[in-house]
Image 1: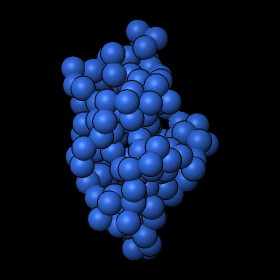
Image 2 (image 1 turned 180 degrees about the vertical axis):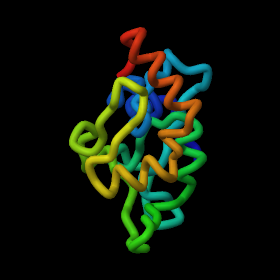
Image 3 (image 1 turned 90 degrees about the horizontal axis):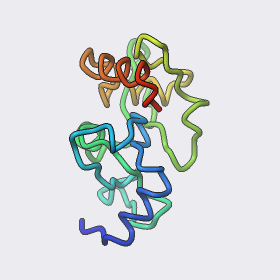
Image 4 (image 1 turned 90 degrees about the vertical axis):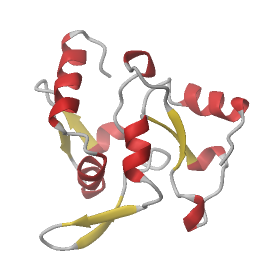
Length: 135
């Protein structure tokens, strides 16, 4: 789906050029961030600013068109963290070790599916914390 440069800039500026899931700044990444649909077009989402988020490429890729996933052992479905409806700090906690901790089920499923505690990501986050560049 084509996103105009004007809309892309508006989404990036609103997010302070920071992934709205991972919270890494684009300036600390080797990758160009992407504008993603919080509710994918496949599920009826639109391209209005309210439904767009600024995302690290792997967050966008791992999320795909999904809206959420199942947490075991209860097999209960939870939607992903929604940066337009939820406050990041109300859902996630960052430990000095670089690990993210979930405060809500939405955060837990987002951490799981987006692999936000993958060992490489934790190391990267820890280094950024030590350099005072996260978040």
